[in-house]
Length: 215
Image 1 (cartoon, rainbow, N blue to C red):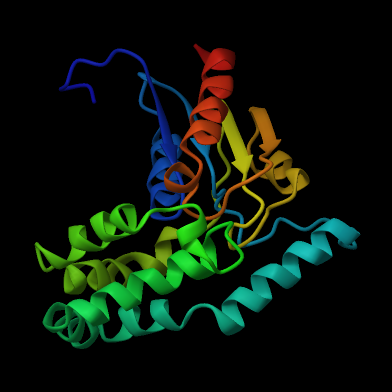
Image 2: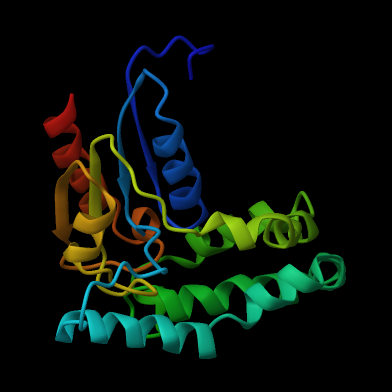
């Protein structure tokens, strides 16, 4: 960003982007004035005493996801070339691999066509299919997953928007225990894991609300 000439900027991320953005916040280069996350890296829950009812609910979300929703991750972490070769060989396989997540992780009641058009979903799938990046996407998990989603305390201004159908919905108290300058926290009315894709208007307004507090 410095080489591109930006004297002030905000970083934003969810999923792997949340890991990257958190790492940027940990480094805190002088031009970075704040970070906004739509999936705060709080899987390693910062518990104090007996968990509240809200915390217990989220802990169950995390446990359920780890038990029933991480097969894709395990395959990519352990056999990225094998699954990558299979997906690169089959357009139907590549489409199914990603479409499944649109169904499971969007705020659509397992009907992603209700919020995303076929063209939008196919555009996303083609970003993997045309350049043949299934294996390299898997290698990201193999090389980095163990270290990418560790909770880090941050001191710079942080904003968080929790979308209701994300893979887990972190409670604000975890953010307060982790981000020492938490200036914005909000729960959106709609949206899931692919927040910017599903609900671009809500996502953009959330980012703008945070930006107004740190500009």
